[in-house]
Length: 289
Image 1: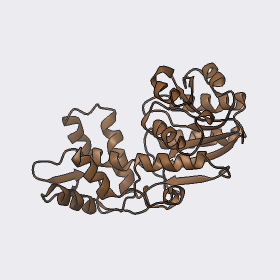
Image 2: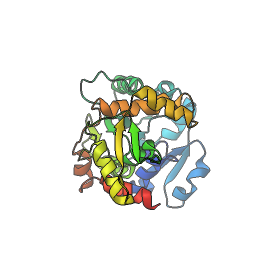
Image 3: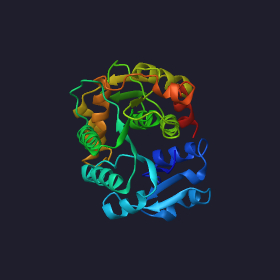
């Protein structure tokens, strides 16, 4: 295979992690990172990675940046931006520049589900339709929510040691960002993934009761769980100073969990050759730091 493997959003957490894992699998001269400000990727340039300037909102910059690229990882745009236009710009620029294969980071959803996650589901459906219409080779990577982000979403344990979120006993499976990045790098570094999709999630599920048990064991003080309504949760976030647009967005992730959108799978485990990082490991690491 000739041509570069390029990662967009290379200054972000997921994109940066993917490049780090790619460097363990692929010679640096075959790798490229895209950034609005190339100087932010100086650490990668020092390791031999090609760094190119490009902006999702500037199609001409994307066409120039994508020249000579064979495989492109399209890391989805940030929430509360014009993601549809950004993704369309990337796809059309990739086609014009001669990119052969686009890998897209979508969000996990249950097959046949009617659940709509704001700022996510509509973008993913639109982008996947654009990718199909492009005629390029496509691989879709359906990511769960990050396991460590779930722990962050819970927030500080209240003085009465009760976790109050809009989720009951529904099983949840999530993978860490690092595990997803490693799996993504494994796909990008190998061939035969055209036309396929992978669900990058945890291999084992857990419930909120499991979560509070783990937190209690690690902190040495029992923690319990109370399911509250999404409205109550949003109100608590707003009272704590969360911006108006973010409070319902964060609540929607818990509603997606309650709806069963995040089920376990073995794609990550097969791609990285080991079990996914456990809930206990993430909780322990975050509490230690």
